[in-house]
Image 1: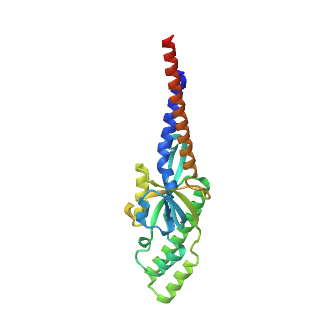
Image 2 (image 1 turned 135 degrees about the vertical axis):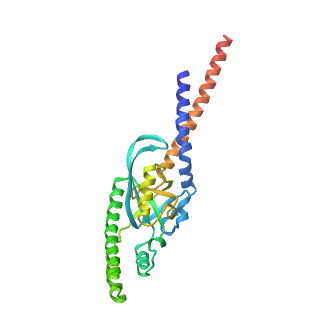
Image 3 (image 1 turned 60 degrees about the vertical axis):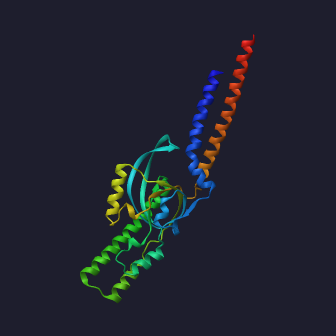
Length: 258
């Protein structure tokens, strides 16, 4: 009987931890608190939500960290996580910004960070980032050419239009929970150095990052299942513990009477 009570107590503690830790994510699902990435502004990436939408202009990864793979704080192995700088500005709007001849192209766009661990999704992010990086290099070379050779309004505008025709149009559908950025010193250094290379700093991006899940996965389903399962185990073990304690008390009282 004593061993049974100890086991039930342990089960209650573990299931209680899972239920408590999973409540915040499950609550976002229950309340259907979702953020449309593509209509969001920078400050929208400062509040917990389920973020969903299309990733357009992708740069990076600026950091790769090997981290503990945890399930609600319980280590279950290690994983490699890659971090990307992403804009929710679509390619048509980006083209309009380029043609507007503004001096602050990137400053007119909304930027956030996506952390990706799923291998298939990492491959897609890497592919999109590489294509965009090559295009941006061509654009930088063209701007440098303008600065060296002087500017011909009609001819150079046509060169820009030709380059915009080559603009990558790859998009990746993503969803995930908005999470706090890593406080790891290496991560912060990689991030800040990367942002500085584009004349950005951390105040120019969202406070929270999107922990992007595998493409096609429905964010929140696993969290809700775990929450309800943990809550059910906690309740059942609690009831069994009460029953066991009552039986033990009755047995003790019966022995005292004899």
